[in-house]
Length: 458
Image (cartoon, rainbow, N blue to C red; front, side, top):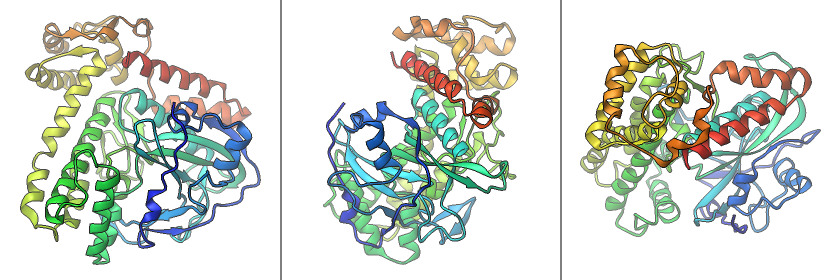
């Protein structure tokens, strides 16, 4: 826990980077979810429910923070097509503050009303969309993925029309706690506008406030630009490795959905794989499989390459290309480390390479759920289930020489079923909310997810 410390640093930039906006006024404010664990990290867990609703449903400003929210300006490639007509269309930056480590974190919104970037949209969020984001962020956090935290969900009493779910449907406003909302698309917009000074300004801002441990914000820009790219590329690679180890499919890996700290955020049509399938997609509209599970490394590198495009004026291509050439190596290192962690073992580098190859091959050849495999094999040997097939002999051979982590003896892994989140479970948790406003199954499942996270991190 830390004390509240305001840090509205984005306001030190000029209005090339944002537009001031007003929050929508909602007819009702029913608090459905408050993340006191996240709130404690920024000194806000002491708020009572009434004050919580005032700040995160009615958007009364926090002390010494933004008096008027900021809709951030950015462009982006969406499914490979450049779109200069986007930006924060249903959200805004509400506050910035420091956590117990001194990091600057954002409180950003989703479903808080229209902005100058909304175009024809209503600026709202469905309650089901908010519930899905709670589940995604809780599960990813438990599985050790660098993710935004769902901070608050308040039902707003509005009825929304949507083409992809039964309408009218209930509405909500969500607040997320995130380590920056500066996106690759933020730089793309400045490049599109031929604002080289704006790009340099944003690079130095990021170096000063987010990467100060490794970068000198006052260094010559031709040195700083490739160093900044290397920081962001390494963080994106680490997160992509986390998605792959978690069996997670983000669904919409457009360049406006990658931020400079590499933190995974903005969950729309996400899915966790039930059974291993590299072609598995999350979005029904991803008909080409551009963002399928097995293509997420490629999509992540492609996005980082688009950031590199924006940095070409500062020293040219060679130093940027040198950074990009190391991307897959960093991603694969992250994946191997995370696979070992999910299995509760330690392996040397050579053995971890063999593990990733044999494990994915065995997972592809079996009908066992992806999450169940890690649960059954936690500690290095199967606790239950039939893994006698030939495809598992390679996995067993690699893990025979592994050192179990101390957490291998955690009683959580004695339970028969893994805590998993296939789409059927998501729908089963939503059904009682939709039918009779029963939130107890959702809250109980969040407790299960957190128990998984506690066991893995023990």
